[in-house]
Image 1 (cartoon, rainbow, N blue to C red):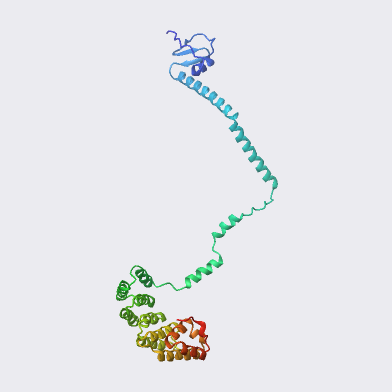
Image 2 (cartoon, rainbow, N blue to C red):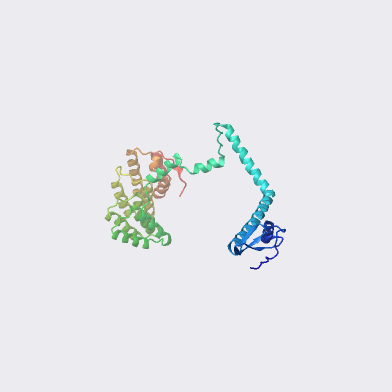
Length: 326
């Protein structure tokens, strides 16, 4: 057996730890009696294979632990650490203050006006509920009427709208009278009386009741052209459909305009129609100014002339100056 000389330990690092464990005054390493594979270094026996690795690992762990302690000590002395400590101490003091209050209940914080406004928008108010119910109870517009109106916006002559309306009716659906009135108005606006009359008849064929607008829209082009006989028949049919036989101020004005525009003008017929309308209004307890408003007086003056006009207005207690000269 021969002695094995270990390398001199370094001053720092793992080897430094080993040197501190062994000490510099120990004799050189000699073989252990009975253990030729073991080495003796001072008071520590180091196995040539396994035990030596364990001691070196323990020494490295000791060195790392010391470095970690130094870093933690530096962290505790940093300004950030002092600030965190102050925050923790403040939290502890707040907790102690709350605990000292016992069962006392703090006064709840009042909401700001902005918070109250936001909270109010999150809930439906009673008046909003009433408005929603009123809107729901209102009758919804006919979808066919909406379609016809949109068609007339880019094709106002009524031809395309009338074709679409016929296709809808042929498919088995039933458009409302409002959709028909829109087409009648389109034809009447450009003086297409025959086309307007065809639409008017289609309303009857579909089983719908004509509206007041249906009669007035159809009568408008005939009144302008002086076709008073057509207007007479049209409003006679309207009067029969009314309980009191009233045709209304708008229809009366169209009839009087038709007499005024006739060739020749029909002053006698206009006077008779006016008296008949005033009698019907009186039987229905309608005031004279409601039966003959400004538009009726204007048409009457054109149809019968200024002299007869003044006599008629005086007879029925109407103001002759309630309408400007035509």
